[in-house]
Length: 407
Image (tube, rainbow, N blue to C red; front, side, top):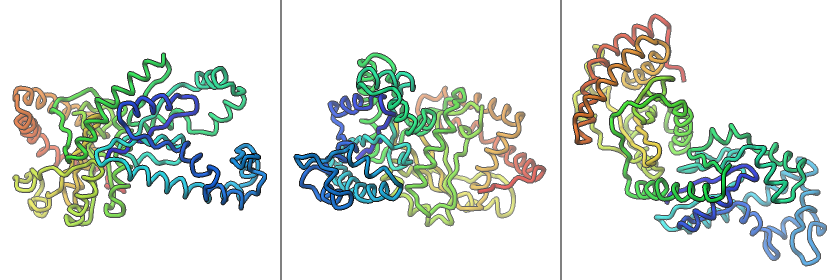
């Protein structure tokens, strides 16, 4: 089951996106509708509210008078906390019921207005944000919903900012134009990303990308942060640290459009224990091509011990955001070098330029190999000599600067 978090500021039009996705076959779990459902007449939720706030929160017909409840519940912090203590467990339980009732191969879209404010993004396979700039949202709220402008601005000010939503968004749908445009975006999202993502998740299929060097993307850093946050939630307290590494973690460096993440663990048994949770979350384990392959000729002594370069490798099932995840043991040379290489290349412009030339040449060599596996192997072989030399240079830089891996 693919779980998608859908959100957007008031007046952004996420209900339109939700409607289109439902028409396409998604299972919609709407937080606002659930919040109303759990306090309908005759429900334990409404009875609990009456016990807490009195009969004055009811209409004559016994239904909830929401303005009256708001007047009582939002007067003090204690009353608001009491309201939340009643509603949140009921909403959570009903949400779990609806999600668990969806088909195993379903695409579940949870429409949550305060997803960003609640820092819920890492719990989803994908977060979709519907975006409209603030002034346009104010206009729509005033002209289309009849809301006083002051109220509209106050409601917007109480929610997450546009930059905060953009930072949380794996997909940003711009609803600034005509209604048919956002509907087209929603349909494309469903067919081009959500459907293949769900299939990859269900079949434990990782997405691959050709070894083509792309221009540096400023959004790689944010994508890396979101990926790290998801992996922290999935892995719990097993890792000692999780880091965005590789070329996409180096600002301004052209790279393959592939987010590299390193999960650091205490031992390989811990790495193996993460295989199931990672696969279930959309990060299937890859064949460990490194397990029996020759290890790099970096270093001497302990660093030259092939066993100390072992790792476990996972990929990503999201067709819109390919990922490569290496699980390495804390303080082993491979784990340390991944962190050092990122920091050295970030700090040393000359080394960064040299590496880029090597990558571009390797990409050209790989392009001559039509078969994907051959292309990947050709790329790896072409960059290997630079790494052999770069390993020594990086550690020389570390000693000269007092670099540590930090935490």
